[in-house]
Length: 118
Image (cartoon, rainbow, N blue to C red):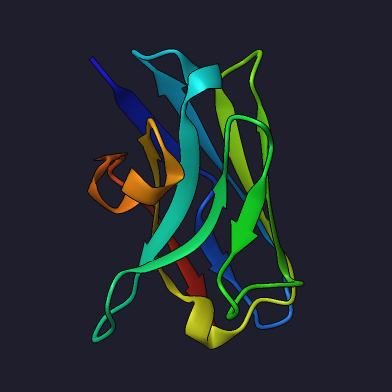
């Protein structure tokens, strides 16, 4: 069965950096689209970055230029490098996967890792 386990969250001061990881198992990683979402209190869930099976990437405007999504397909690990963090970036970050990127909203998700920016 599909398993997604996030790690790397924590507390950081504004302007700082964090790198999140998501270890995936239970599916053919190289054939799936992977993405990162975040859920902040009082806000709707936001899709912030995705990477397709051909390494095509997309970012939400709110993180463009500050966050970088990447993956190690040999190890089935997805990353999210976050720089110039702002308090508005605080939230529960979780990775997701689906066969196609346009299905990520309804795909498999992990439990998430908390990011707090103060």
